Image (cartoon, rainbow, N blue to C red; front, side, top):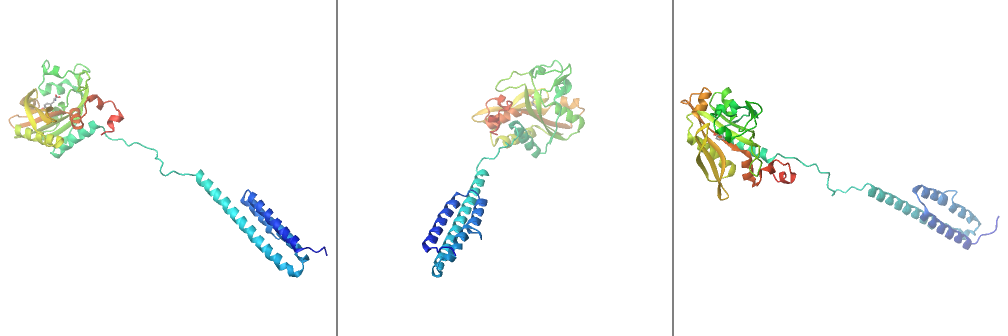
Length: 335
Ligand code: DAH
C-alpha cells in the first residue's frame, strides 16, 4: 500500500484540476474540442477519476468529504462545458445570420411599367366618345393617291386648296396623305349609307417645325351620312362631343371654307379666357356624294376633322408640340 494521502493534498489536487479545467474549457476552440475535453476530464479514465482513484488511501471518515467535493467539481465542469458550447452555437448562429442578412426594407429591383403615350390616350378618348354616339372606327392608308386625298374630295388638280396642304409626293399620283378625309371616300365606296364612322390616323404636310407645327401629326375624321341629316345634327353632335371632351365649355361655330363641305364651319371652344380653334366641319358637299354615285337629294350628312395634338396640348397645357415627339421620359411620365 502506498503512503497515506492527506485530505489536504487531495482537495488541493481537486482544486488544481478545477482551475485547469476552467482554463482549458475557456480555451477550447470548437464543439469537438469541448467533447474531447469532457471525456478527458470526466470520462471513466479521465483526470477526475485519476484523482479520485487515490481516495482509497484516505481514512474512511474523510472519503465522503472528498466525494462531495468531487461532485461539486463535476457539476461545475459540466456547467462550464454546457455554457461554452451554448456560447459557441450562439456565435455560430449570429455569424450565419450576419452572413445571410436580408434587408427586407431595401428597395427591390425596379422594373418600370410603361404606359400609353398622351397622343394615343387622347385619340382613344376622342374615338371612345364617338363610339358612345354610335360611330364605328375606320382606317385608311397613309400613302394615298391624289384622287382620294384631293380629287374625290372636290379638290381637282390646279385647285388652289391643294397648295394649302402642300404635301410629300412619292410619285406623280402618290403622296403621303395630308388629312384623314380620304377615309370618307374609301369607306363610302365600299359601304352604302347610312354610315357613321370615325377615322383616326397619322397625316403629313410639308410644314416647317415650330411650337405648333409638325410635318407629321394626327387627326380624327368624323363622317355621318343618312337620310334627313342637316346642320342641326352636325351642331348637336360636335357640341356634345366637345363638351364630353373638354367639359361644359362654351362652343362657337364660325363660317369657313372647305372644298368638300358646304356650308363649312370652324369650331372654337372658350378655354382659359380665349376662343381656341379646335376643329373643322361642315355638311358634306353634294358634289362629293355625286362623285360616289350617291343621290344628294336622298342622302345628306356631315363631316368633321380635328387635330389630336391640339386636343392633347389644350387638355394637358402642353406649350410645344415637339414635346410630344421627343420621347423624353421626364415629360412623358407626367401623363
Ligand atoms: N381635312 C381638313 C384638314 O385637314 C379638316 C376637315 C375640315 C375635315 C372639315 C372635315 C371637314 O371632315 O368637314 O384641314
